[in-house]
Image 1 (cartoon, rainbow, N blue to C red):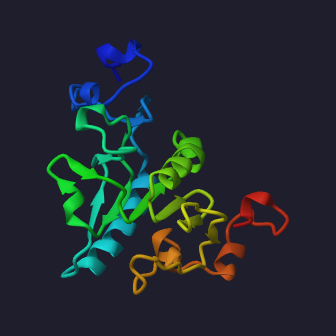
Image 2 (image 1 turned 60 degrees about the horizontal axis):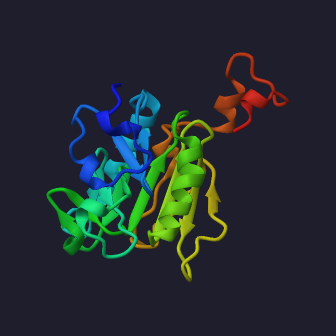
Amino acid sequence: MAVPKEKFKDYFTYAQYKNWSDDERWELIEGEAYNMSPAPGTTHQTVSGEVFRIIANFLEDKPCRVFAAPFDIFLPEKDEPEDEINTIVQPDIVVLCDDEKLSEKGITGPPDIVIEILSPSSTTRDQITKRDLYEKRGVKEYWIIDPAGKIVWKYSLSNGEYGKPEVFDYKGTPSFQALPELSLNLKKVFGMENYTEETKEKRPGYSKNSKENRL
C-alpha cells in the first residue's frame, strides 16, 4: 500500500486525511496515522458479518442504527473545527442511537457501542491503544472479540472509566447495556453451534493434556 505523500509529517488531522486516496485505509489516533492493511482475513470477516447480521436484525424498526467498516468515526477532543480533528477511526462495527451525530461523512462523537474484532495485525492497537482512546472519548460500551481464542471482553463506561471488563468464553451469551434485550450467542458467532465436549474428544489427535485442544 502506498504511503500518502504527506506521511513524512508526524502529526495529522482531517485536513490531510480527507485528501488521501480512497483506495487506502488509514486511521488517525491523536494525530498519528495507522495503516489498516492487510485486509481482514476470512475468519475475521465471518465473525464480523455474523455479529452485524444479529444486531441489524434486532434493530429493524428501532431508532438505533448499526454500521460496519469502512465507516469514519470522528472523535473530537473538544469542539475543534472539523479540519482540526486528529482522531478518525474505522471500528469493525458501531451502534449509534443519536442521529444528530450522523452525516454523510460518518459519525462525529462517540457511538453508543463500538465492537472491534481482533486480527493478528490489530491485536495491540485494539486491546490497548483503542481501549484507552474509547474510554477517554466517552464510548459507553467497547467490545473486543477474539475469534482465535473464542473470547469476548466487554467494557462498560462508569464515571468516565472502563474498569475491569466482563469476560465471556464461547459458551457465553453477553447482552448489550445500550440494547438490553439483545444478547450474542457466542457459539453461533464463532460458528460452534454443533460443538460439544464429545465432538471435541472425537477430533483426530485429541488429548486432554494438549494445550492446542483447550478452549
